[in-house]
Length: 455
Image (cartoon, rainbow, N blue to C red; front, side, top):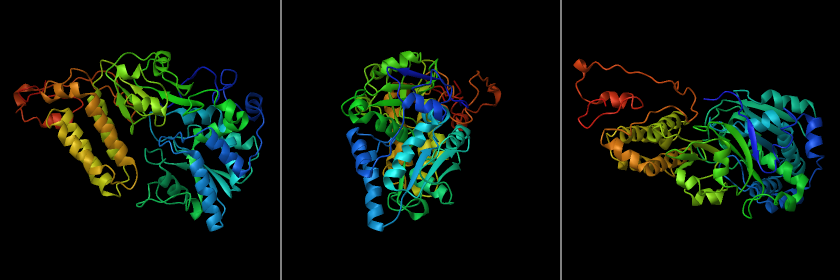
């Protein structure tokens, strides 16, 4: 797992990453030199801008930002209460680095977007949420000292867990409750921080608003597609020889991103992160970087996470590791998370070890889909089912007990991932009874042959 922010690259005109070539970090003076001044906007103007550029949340779900704004405005009017603006910069998924890049290199873009929203909504306060790995926190604190915000602004640190950045979990944490999603679904636009209407969005989303407010909707839309104007930030890790956060216009051919990061040909590429979907190498080379384009290729944009695998890596073993991680990251407060996800992880392990058919995975995924208190069970089941589908040929080899002949290398960026150096397992054949239990205990290291003995 990486512990430092990767390098930044750009295809075409830089926007969020403008000035990075000249400045290591854009302080307030450098920020204004590169991006220019920013004027406050009235509610109708900000709402019109968000609608005009069709801005969708960059945290993964892709919810229209204008709808969030409108919901908070209507809730404030209905309840006669002031709102709170919350910036989600926690980036709990280990394979994602784009928000940390903005935090460490261009923190004033985040603050600009939050300030725009706070002024337009007449907010009571701004809350900036970062993970307790503290990457980018100092840069954000320095940025707050370099400028004046329109309303009181605080920084809250939350546990660096996969589910800590979920909207309900974030609100709970700010309110002093455990950093887990609420047991029942609540709309933060109605009752969020301190039970006030709350506008909650991702760090890149606010940064995109700051760019659009300066450019206006027409110039902003000069890059991107008709459905998705502007640029996107992508985190490329895995088998890429050049790990990087890449800014490119929506609609850029995915192959250009892969070539830039020197990604070798492999069995598949994870698009959208641990709640995303796998696509084949062939599909990736025909896809474009946009929600619509990646969906057509069988993938998803999500939070812009791209994790390619190399040909010497076992894709099913890597996927099984992720499903086990996701099962362990659940809040454990609803049935699908507490019991369903561990069952799904076991089902995937059984299928990968050749001890059970793929139908066991499908059944376990069906048991959790659409039944959770948050989207974690749905995202995990989507990831698992996608792996079973895209790597079906490999699964057939695993089913025979022979395995695919490739090693699980721990390249998915998981916390505590195993050392990528080769491991040796010494087997005392005189004590092997051939019951196959070892393959269930350590499926990442042991595969059984057709007779039930370690291969």
